[in-house]
Image (cartoon, rainbow, N blue to C red; front, side, top):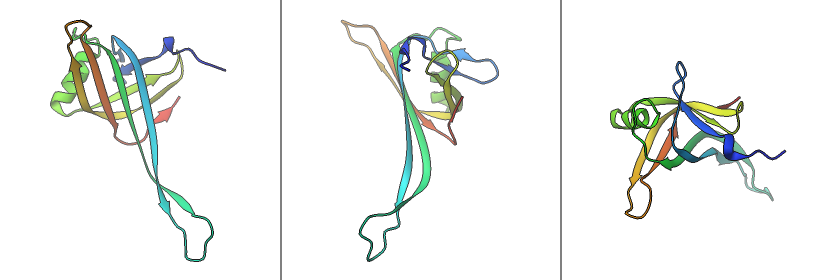
Length: 129
């Protein structure tokens, strides 16, 4: 069944969740190291899984209003703090984990809206609910 992206969102903080305002899209990347175990005489390569990692990115309209999520993410970036983040694909299903803000980019063009781009580096496991 296809899911419309219109109900997606990003929230931060697990005790009092804050929906990050103005976000227009997010992307989640899940990766695992593959370690080659091929031996002499093998006709095919063989692999086992190694360490896993995740990262995410999000883009939207710049809005530094207090308590709207964007100002909290900027504060986390400036202070090197981890954030608890959830990436919702619909009203009830989401990926969650702890992350650091690895990149925060603001773009201000004379003929367009001011935009915000955020890169998250996962710290530990990500889960799906």
